[in-house]
Amino acid sequence: MGRIHIAALVMALGLSACGNKRDAGAAGSAIKDGACVAVVTPAKIQVVAAQQSRIEELGKLLDQVDTIGAPIELFDGIRQLDQWKALKARSARFAAIDGVADTLAQAVKTLRAFRGGLTEVQTRLGNLKGELDRVMSDPGSARKIEDVRAQVSSQLRGAVEPLSVQVQAAIRDAIVPLSAQLAELSDVVVMGCTAAKLSGGGEKMKDLCAEAKLDFAKALTYLDDVKGRPAKLFADVTSQLETELEPLIDAETRKLIDAAQVKVNEALRLPPTDAGSGSAGSASAGSAGSGSSH
Image (cartoon, rainbow, N blue to C red; front, side, top):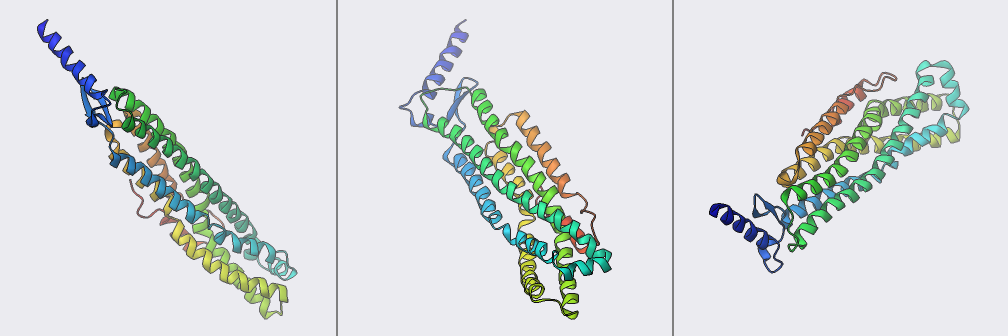
């Protein structure tokens, strides 16, 4: 009985220390096995903030997605011209490229939606940071580590789940078709513009073609920069958070992150969209997520 009383006294002292606002060492602590242990530090909070900044960085890059949209919109004008319609009437390849352009226009819309979704994920990571801030700033409220873990894991799942879905959609519905077909669309447009120029063409056709050639070059450069970013973002963000918050992540959340990473990896292995030759594009699609393993 004496030992039980001693154990109870030790636990009570631990709870008292962990819940003592005058004890600076209690900041960021929780009760584990009757002892007051540090579970949150300023460094851990900074890591969460760094992931918000990482997402914001990709968001700023995606703010320039009109770099890809511009030549596709220009082609929409070109294909309304009689000279282009004449080329379509003579060539199946020119006729088929309309479908490619429509697919890529939808891909640009997907990237815009992805950019908007990143703002939501930033907000949810802010909720996670807020939970960690509360543990740091209120040492007077002793909490069991199980309770802190449940709250942190819930906030982490709330950020990871939508990010995973959005990254998969960005890869599947935007990165893969753009990697496979943007260069092909550029080649066909340049070919058609050359043919139209040789046959006389018209001033409007010449002006649109000159602008399209420059815009396609910019779009392809931009695509090379952006195509591996979504998958890498997911791998880096989840890896950093798992490592830094390891004691505060429950088994359910770990399984969710692992399963989400598998789905992102599967999206990276999708075959390129079948439309036109796109052989060079196929190689690009295959490398869309290079360096983004988890």
